[in-house]
Length: 150
Image (cartoon, rainbow, N blue to C red; front, side, top):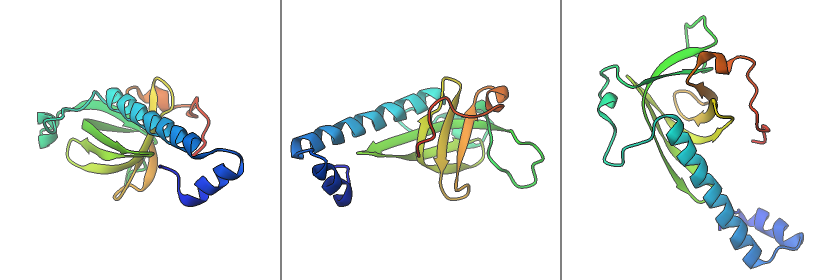
């Protein structure tokens, strides 16, 4: 079950029984798996045998653009070489690691905003929600096409 006890109690109070809670929990887990697959596809997929050769810090990887705040940067849009995105899911949680050419960040959540832009919640070293795109212009005018319900 992927609902905390308070949420389960509230859902029961509005009429859901244990079978309904299990079904909803399964739907949540499936939605998170699908989101993880879409995010990995956006960044070019992952290799289950380990990080690609570009992760060695040789400057490889594809160019992506973000609205990440960077110290000493005068630009609102940053360019990054991304070696890989490796995600895993457990119930309603999406976690993983985003490897840039010379550094990386833990991923604490993520979602596809539209076909051109995704958003990752990055953990320690960044501690922020960051939008990524393959084209820097996709970050302009910037609101997501989905509702910001997080």
